[in-house]
Each structure stands twice: as C-alpha cells, then as structure tokens.
Image 1 (cartoon, rainbow, N blue to C red):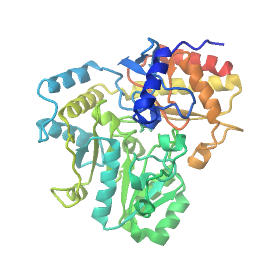
Image 2: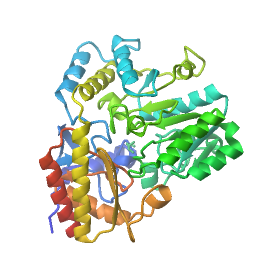
Image 3: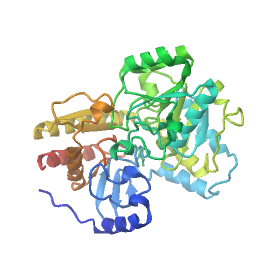
Image 4: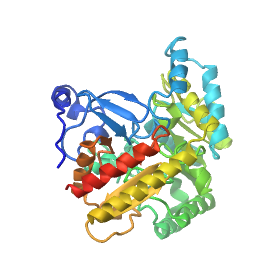
Length: 434
Ligand code: HOZ
C-alpha cells in the first residue's frame, strides 16, 4: 500500500473556496465529483509538471483540459505573451495580431476560409449554431448524446463532460423552449441519422458533433457515420459543424478533419488555439461566414474577443506546432502509454476498453467482459468507482489524470519516454494495489 501524502493546504484552501465559490470551483469539471474526495489546488506548472500548494509534483495528463499541447510555460509562448503585455492588455479595437492568427488558422484547418475569434469554446459553438440557423433559415440542430459543446442552453441536452460526470446532462434552468429544436441521437448511429433526415431533413439547420469525442471519455467515430453525416447534410441543405475545441491542432495540425478526410461546413475551435489563454474561434466557408455581423446580419460580439494576449499566445503555439511538428512524437508516446496501460490492466485482471487517437486516450473500466465503447449508452456502463480508485492510486504516485471516467487524458510534447514509462509503472502499481 502506498501512503497518501498530506494535502492539508489543499484541504484548507478548498474549505475556504466552498464558502466563497459555488462548490469551491469555477468550473465543475475540476471538482473531483466523478472520483470522490477533494480537488487539489495548484500553484505552478512547468513543462509536463504540476506542483500543488502542498509542494507535491505530478506528471500532468490534463494540460488544462487540452490547451497545453506544448507543455506549460513553453518559452516561445511565454515570450510572445510578454511582448504583447508590454504593449497593453486590451484595446477593444482591431490589431494586426488578429490578422496573423486568422491567417494561421485558415492555413491550418481544411474547412476554414474565414474565421471569427471569440473568448471560449462555448462561445464558438453557440455562435456557430446561431450562424447555421441564420444561414439556412431553419431551426433544427442535431447533436449526439455524450458530446459536449460547452454550456450553451440549446446544447445542454444529453451533454457529456461534467454534465455527464455529475449527472446533469439536462440542466435545470434550461427551458423546454431553448431545447425544443435540439434533436439528440446516439453517436455512431448511422441508421438513426438516415431515418431522421428522411423524415425531417428540411427542418435541420445543422448536424453538430465532435469528430472524435473527448467528452464522454475518448470515443472514435466509424467512417460510415461521419460519411453519412457529410452526405446527408449536403443532400438536405443542412450544415455539418465539427466541434474541434478539443481535437483542433491536437490530433493533427489541421485537426481531426485533416486525418479523417471529411471537411465540415463550419468548425469550432478553443483550447490550443489560445495557447493557454482564453480564446475560441469559429470558421468555415466564406459564403457562410460572411453572414456574421457586420458583414452580414447574424449577431455575435465580444469585448475581449481577439484579446491581444490570447492572440499572441495562440499564434506562438500554432507557429511552434507548425515549425516543429510534435505529432509523430505524440503518437509514439500515446502508443507507448496505451500499450503500458493495456498490459497493466491485463496483469491485474481488470477489464478495460482503451480508446486512443494520438495524444488523447481513455481507459474505460468495465463491469463485465470488454465491450466496445462506441456511444454514450456503452460509455455510461463504465465502472466509475473502479476508475476513481485508479485515479487516486495514480495521484498518490504523482500522476495527475482526468478526475472523471468521462474525460480524455492529454499527452504534451514536453512528456518524455521516461515520463511515459514512469506513468506505466505507476499504473501497474495502482491497479495491483486496489
Ligand atoms: N471542456 C473540458 C473538458 N471536457 C472541461 C473544462 C471545464 O468544463 O472546466
């Protein structure tokens, strides 16, 4: 048995936070509600490491839930932020930096000819949905159970991420009116999608999906499913919207759409595009994007949209990814970690389903025999208590994994072979020691 190190300062900070902030956290995903116990408070991050306020170090496999693909405090990103900071933090007026980041995004993402910057992934998907409705003149939005698109009222239906973890896939406060045009299907349910379009194709403004899902744990699409989504939207005059907030610049420089070979009409971005600062974006074909105000009439605005610090961090991150592609390294690390986790689970006799694409991965703890996890009904059968025990076993061994079975882990370019091997050794010990 490994003794748990003392986290008394985190405990005290959390007690104080709970009296000040609802649930003690500013976003429920970090509340540890899916694994039990109290969240750990951090004071710094360097490369692949996090340091908590009690002085413990952890190998970080969250990377701020995705943005930190280069690791924390990458010198190129830090220098860019410092340069921007020396010139002021916000003007509420256009800058050349925004042009530069727009050029980088357009060059990288196959579907994007024009792009609008916002301050978060939630805003990006909210705006893309409004634009799809404005462009098509239709109301219906098709989403998939377990996909999460931020806390947009119309999309908080059968939502993944913390909504799934904490059992509020349909939040109180979201009115029936706000979701009456949201149609939910199971992910990978090609036939159901075909039937829906056959019956109601002319009502549908957009099909919105995560092209590789990270928000019910990692779930991969079948090629048939994505191809059907592309074919049916095209045939019926609806838009296909890829939520690449997690996968954009993560699975490849051009996002999931680059490796899947399917080009949506609109793409939403967040996380990596802001290099660790708050920035989101949505973009797509020129004739669609030109419907956004003031070029067109679809309203969308933001005081801090295109904030110069966030734009500098995002541009530096994208330039680094483009100049020194980390993707082969991330794939190698991902494969090594996957093989190691698989071996650790087998050695301990623990039934798991492991899904991975590049540097995103989930090990689903299963209650019976290994059964493919392809959608929310199969993901939600996971043994979340077993995941919670594994999570804490890893924490006690200095490895910080997602605090929910229903979130993906992220590897960064700062992780080394030795880090991956240490993580696998920790997994062997944690799984043996349950
Ligand atoms: N979108 C992140 C991963 N599901 C979670 C971040 C959050 O909700 O705080």
